[in-house]
Length: 232
DNA sequence: GCCAACGTTGGC
DNA sequence: GCCAACGTTGGC
Image (cartoon, rainbow, N blue to C red; front, side, top):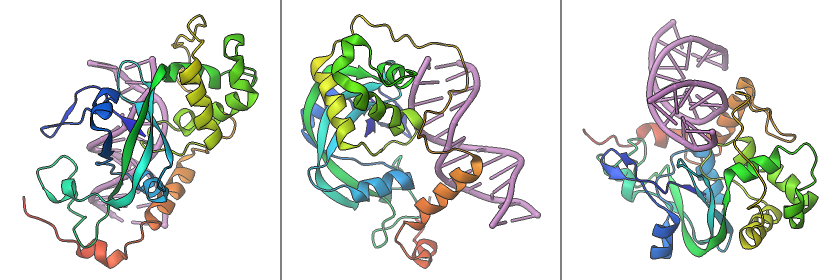
């Protein structure tokens, strides 16, 4: 799950939420997700599901800590009902909420911050053999990283993580060991070549995915159409 | 129902 | 700050 550690004001509200902020509050409602696929993933979450806490849209993006689901999906309407709020959605109302959130409980900080650039570097290896210093990751680990939606898709703010992948990342955060390997962001090719197993991304296939996501919205169509539209 | 235009995300 | 990727909107 992605959060932004740096201040950014959206319609008058600062959306900053860093690992420091998280540690201070222990548990927090994951409000503000306004993407169907991300919402559907949150609806699938069950109590105790493990979460990677990711620092996004910042100088050094990467995995900053660990968390778990402490409350299963419920309507995100605090923010939705106030028309002045940045997450306001006129198509959602109290009876027929469109957006949901889970509560997430802080577990721990990553002893070693796991930068996206490192994960990318590992995902870009032509083989599945980790660099010597990261031997403990194993070939399985490299393959898990190669398959992460974080690598293959980007954008989506809530993503699935396999149990194995979560373990690999947590072990990395625990053990570190990449201080002496270079994983400079190479400024070479503009188009990133898709990794094996990446979801196909032709326009047509993306449109189909979107349609699926919207369909899995379980509200009857008429309720969406009839949703109250507040003034202003 | 298609698809161009537009808006947002988010790495760099 | 740039801009590629891609989700969303709306005209037809």
